Structures are given as C-alpha cells and as structure tokens.
Amino acid sequence: MRDERALCSRFLDFMVEAGALLFGDFTLKSGRKSPYFINTGEYKTGEQLSRLGDFYAELIQNSLNETEGLKIDALFGPAYKGIPLAAVTAVKLSSRGLNPNVSFNRKEIKEHGEGNIILGYVPKDGDRVAIVEDVTTAGTSVREVVSLMEKLGVRAKITALYISIDRMERGTGVLSATEQIKSDYGIGVYSVASAWDIIDYLENSPISDAPANAARMREYLNEYGLRIK
Figure 1 (cartoon, helix red, strand yellow):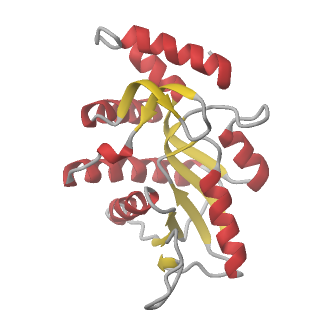
Figure 2 (tube, rainbow, N blue to C red):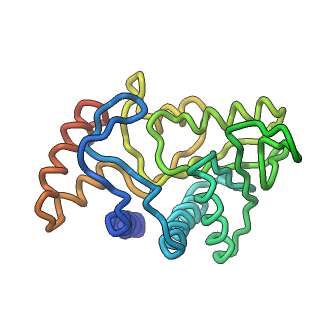
C-alpha cells in the first residue's frame, strides 16, 4: 500500500507540473458538467512521455506481482490517445525485463496498402491482452476492443485495463464504470490514481485555490460518483 500511495503522489505531482490536471468547468462526453478534466494532450515532450511510461510500467508491474494469475502477452492502445500510451509503456516495461507485444487500431478502415484495422502486433487466439488508456468514464474503450476482436474472429482474452485516473463515476446504473467493466467482462481495472486521490492531494496542497477545487470535486462526486469518503 505504501508503494501505491507513493506512486499516486508522484504521479499527481507530475500531472500538475505538466498541466494535464485542469480545474474549471468542463463538459464531458457524457454531458455531465465536471469541475476537473484530465488532458493527456499536455504531455508534449520526450521527457514527459518517458516519465508517463514509467508510471504506467510501474503500475503494470505492481499488478502482475500482486494479482494471482494475471498475465499479459500484448498491450493494446485504442486510437487515438491509447496509441502513444501503449508504446511508451512497452518501452519502459522492456527495461524492467518484460517485453509485451504492442497493438493498436485505426478508427477508419483504410482502402489502400495492407488495409489492416489492427496495426503492430495482431492478437491471436489465446493471447492475453491488456488495454492501456488515459481515463475511463463509461468503459467505451473496453467494449470497442472486445467488439473489434469479435468482428475479426480473434479469441484473445482481455485481462486488464490500465488507466491513469479512475474518475469513480457511476454510469447509467449504480455501478461505477470500472465496476461495470469488472462485472461485464471479468477483467481487472488498475489506475495510478483516483478522483478521491486528487481530492486528498488538493486538501493537502499549499496552492491557494486547492481547497475550493477539492470542495467542488467532492460535490461532483457526491452527485455522480461513489461516495467512499
């Protein structure tokens, strides 16, 4: 637990430094008005991407060490944000003695060239595939990857979803997106940090507007999230 807390704290420091953790008024794809937003487009430099890969690699290695039976043959990066995430994570895992294959998809079918919808490594029957994504609010990326595998007739097994932040919001029912994914697909969802971790971080921050942002996040999660604190 201590290692997980240290990883979470370091990651939130990194997000703030990179300008990837924003506070204000944002409209999500779900239509909800959120007081905070995760903008992975702010990771712009080689150093930032290298550090980001380190965080994901540490998260994945921790999960493999701590979760009995969890195995990974390939990382899948859903287009578009998941593509660089899967790539930099695989590079960092290789320096830790792991060497997963890397797969990613096109959003549009190409009419020329090789025409493949999956690029890089194409998963095979029996492969254990982990999805690497930035955040999940409704579990869309998992459903799309599962659907894509089914359309291609590939009987690969999705074993895990790795994300930077678990927003811990309910979907259309009483379960959060991550709980719904676990229920629907039986896969583990692992995050570097959660929305409640961000609140704790803000409440212990010397930044002048941090308490107000923490209060707004609490109010938002009390309405849309899982109230665990």
